[in-house]
Image (cartoon, rainbow, N blue to C red; front, side, top):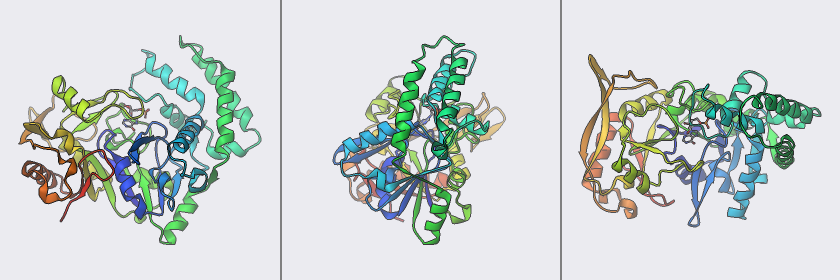
Length: 423
Ligand code: IMP
C-alpha cells in the first residue's frame, strides 16, 4: 500500500496528485475525515470538489473504498453522489465504491452541535468546517455513536430518533434557531435509503485480500499532518488521525505493508480556521498570494490565511509520516515575485528550533531566508531543464533542507500541469 498525505494545514493539492497516479492503482481508499475534506479534481476542463468520496471514483478500473477511520454523513454523501452524476454521467459509483460497515455515521444533530460549540463563547472556537466531524468522532470515542453497519439492524430508526431527540434537548438550552426535528429526521432517513444502494462490507478483509493478491492500494489522506488530532497544532486541529499511521489504523492494514509515502506540500503555507501560524503574511502581499492562488476554502469558501513555507513544520511532518517523496505544488503562484521567503528555523532567546512539533513557545521567532524570485509563466513548461534558474535553486535548497527528494512539481491547476523531476 502507498499513501498520499498533506504535510501542512490542508489544501496542498492532494486531489490533483491522486488523480494523476490513481490509474496505476487497483484501489483508492479514504481512511480519515469525512465531508470536511475538499479534494479538487479537473475533468474535461471542469472542476469538481470531492468531499467524502475517494479521488479514484472517476477511474473505471479502480475500486474505491470509504474506510473504517472515516465518518460518513449520509445527507452530504447523497448530495455529493448526485452532484457527481450530474458532473460526469459516465461514472458508476454504485459499481466502484464500497463502504466500511465500521465507518461512523455523522448525524444531523452532530452538525448542529458543531455550530453550537463554534458560536458559544463558553467553548474554544476552532474554526471548523461545521460538518459535525468532531461531534461524530467524540461520540465514537464515547462509544455512543452509530456505524454504517447499524443501518441494517431493525432498531436503527428508533436508535437514531432517540439520539436526535436527546441532542435537541441539549441544543434547546442555547439560543440557536433550530430546524424542525421532523424535517432533519426525514432528510436523514431518505439519505439512509439512498446509502443502502451501495455495498457496505468489512473493508479490512477486502483490502488485505487484495494486497495478498498483489493488487495495488493507494491510501488517500484528507486534511494534513499539522491538523492531526495527536501531532498537529492542538486544539486547532481536526478530530482524526491524518498521518501514515492513521492510514494503517483507518484501513486495518499493517505498517509492514506500506511502500511509498507521498507527502504533498505547497511552496508556501495556508491554513483555514484558527490556530498558530507563525509565518503568516498579513496585509497586501498575503492578499495578493491568496487571490493569485485562489486560496479560498474549496469546502467552505472561507479565505485561507497565507504564510511563508515553514521548514521546521515541514521537517516534522516528514518525520512523523516517514515521507519518501515530496510533491511540491503551487510554485507557479509565487512566479513574478522579486523575492520569496522560507522559514528555515525558529529563534529563541537561548537557542534555535529546527523542527517544531505542533507546539511552539510564545517567544519563538521565525527566521526567514530571502531567496531570489522567478519570473514568467511556468505553467506551460514541459521539461524541467526549462524551469527558471531561481526556481531550480529554490528546489535544490528545499531538497537539501528536507532530506527527502521532491519528485514532482505541480506548475498550475490543470491536470497536465505537473513535472516529474529527474534524479
Ligand atoms: P473540522 O475538521 O471541520 O472539525 O475542522 C477543524 C479544523 O480543521 C479547522 O481549522 C478546519 O478549517 C480544518 N480543516 C478541516 N478539514 C480541512 C481541509 O480539508 N482542509 C483544510 N483545513 C481543514
